Length: 282
Picture (cartoon, rainbow, N blue to C red):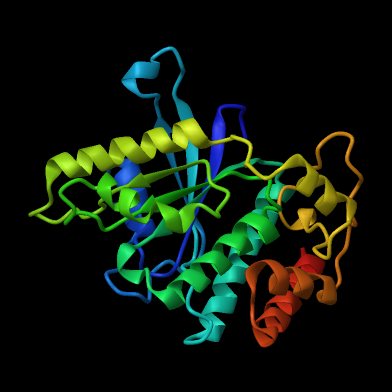
């Protein structure tokens, strides 16, 4: 990967509009989309696009972005096998990028307002922690993109009404958008959404997450119950911090999944077994 290229991983539940978001960013219908909660992406796919700075930042040069469309995460209570497969595929992608010595610069968490129920809040936090804390070890910044806001007179109003729900997350930015591209789509909102997401990616990639230095050091040093899982993500540690363990047992992985993601014991057991086995085979 050249110095100007950036890997951006887009994740979220199945059917929330991840593929439509990619089509919005790249400007055409390259990513296959689905209108139902089952989703249509069965393997991680990459799409390359050039993203330039906003007019107010013309002194900065355009960047080559590699967008990764990941398998949609399902509710483990409704479809455990589909959920396990999606999580496993995400881990394989992150491990693959690490082995190729590339850098993951940004995680984009795609969300749909219609799914903001009490039950979905727990799933949302679990999915966030799976990618941010377990797979990427709190070293890759996260942004939120809220889709399906075409019915909002002002799309940003949605965030103003719901911002409190996100205060406990470690995020470096957000965008409220529409990805609807039907014949009756509001062209102004579509253009606004494209600009928002492109600028969000350009301005957010490579930013440092807001996690405190003391908490990071505790995790790296093994001082908390969550042992470092860095080899599953980027494979590098900040200079001066202790070298993490190279291999992790199924039990240690389970502790991270249950502690950070609040997974049920059975889900944590099954996923930990797959992740550890995949690591052995790579």
